[in-house]
Structure formats: C-alpha cells, structure tokens
Image (cartoon, rainbow, N blue to C red; front, side, top):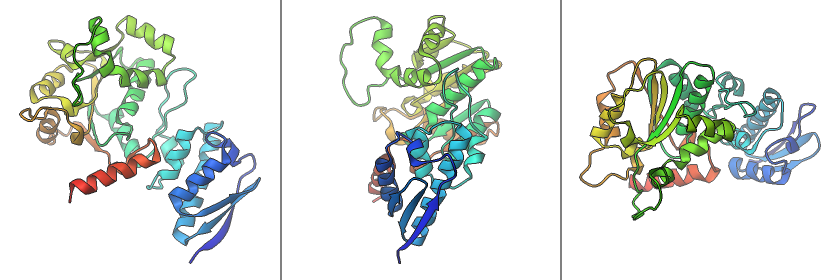
Length: 317
C-alpha cells in the first residue's frame, strides 16, 4: 500500500544545490530509481510510494545532505547519481574517509560503492592489484586517482599508463602520421582520466618530460620500471606472453594496477587470455589483491547497469 511522507531538509540545503541545479530533473531521477512520486517545496520534499521505496529515497536524501556538508560546496551530477543508485548503504562518511586527493583545483575523488572503497584500500596496501569487472565501474579512473595522489606526495617518481593496442573488432586500416599519432586513439581514455586529475598544462609538461608516460603495451618490453606507479588498462586484450612480460617489468619501489573486463576481449579465436591465466595462476599469491566489480558498481549513466545486467542474463540463458 502506498504511503506519503515528508522529508525536511537541513538549513542551507535544497535540491537546487544538487547536481545541475535542475530540481525537476532530479525529482524525475527519484521517480525512476525508487518508483515513487516526489513533490518538492523550499525546505521539504513529499514522497509517495511503497514503504521500502520510501525508506530508500529518504536514505538517499539524507546521504545527499551529509555529502553536501562534507564537500563544502554544491554537489555535481556524478555525486548525485552515485548516491541515488548505491545499493549498499554504507554511510557516506565512511566512503568520504577513503577519498583521494588529486591535483590542485580538482575535486577530491570519492569512492561511490563499497567495492570501490575496497579497491582503493587494496591499492594503498598492495604492490600489485587486479581490478576486474564491467565497463563503467571506475576501475581505471580510481587507479589513475591513486597514481596521481602518490606521485604528488612523492611516493613514486613516475606514472606509466599502458594498454594493448587492439582494434576492438574493427579494421582501422592504415593510420597516417607519426608513431604517436598511430597509437593515440588506443590511449585516449587514459589521457582523459589523467586530465581529470591534474591541470592539463601541468600534465602535458610531465608527459613531455616522460615523467608521465602513456604508451602501448609493446613499448614495455625489455624495461625494468623502478619507483613507478604502472597501470595496465584493458588487460583482457593481453596474451599470456604479454601479461607475463608486463608483470616482470615491476621494479623496486613500484606498484601496478591491472584492470580489465574478461567479457570484452578482442583477442583472436586462437589466442589465450593473459588476464584469465593471471587470475588463475596468481590467486595463491597473498601479496596480490583481486577486486571484483559487478554491474551494481557501475557509476556512469544509470541505464548502463541495466544494460549490462540484461546482457548478462541473456548470455546465461
């Protein structure tokens, strides 16, 4: 049976301080996610729906208020979507305690799920971490945040970002230009994440001096990487030989994070997955951490979780 309750805001808080400031759009998200009716006034919102749905909506509103105070500024749309969709209601203060400080003028990076919190904790404690799961769960983004954080604190002297140059099932043909021009499309997502963490001019200067290196995986062969934070992205596209080559690059004072989604491999039919082999072979090594993300950890558009879940259900039929 549907019930109606009012949720009163704390002084200084309003729905206009949340996300884009579009109160109508925010209320529509509440209706979609919690299956309730919502009407807002200046200092309260009236909610109508089933009891469990009302409790979920009220918990989300309470967390938004808490995060608003912790941020000390308006919440962006990423904060809002993460709070609204998070199924594990660990207090937002606990997630805040695990936040990552990045470059000057950039917002602190906040884990948006319990799994993301465990992932950040694992990166802080372990020299080798595997982050496995679907797209949109923050695997690479959070690894980048930790790389920038440790670099700015002087705990590592270099950041190395790499991924296999695979064609994602498409034949791109001959790409004109320099070697950098040819591999740049494969590495663009890493640049995008980096520029979110540091002022673009500063990051570009560090890249020009090779203090931050963004390169295809093939460029890692024959090197020993000391005092570096190394991220291997899209690891599902490595062969067994490539993965072993990468893991044996780890030098003194370095740490690495390997991210991938085993369901999105672009390897050929006769190629064995380096990621799958590593996950099986390295499980007994207690010094290595393995964090598994699910569709419930997706932090991009709210429909992405439903899309991933629908595809997973179809593949299991």
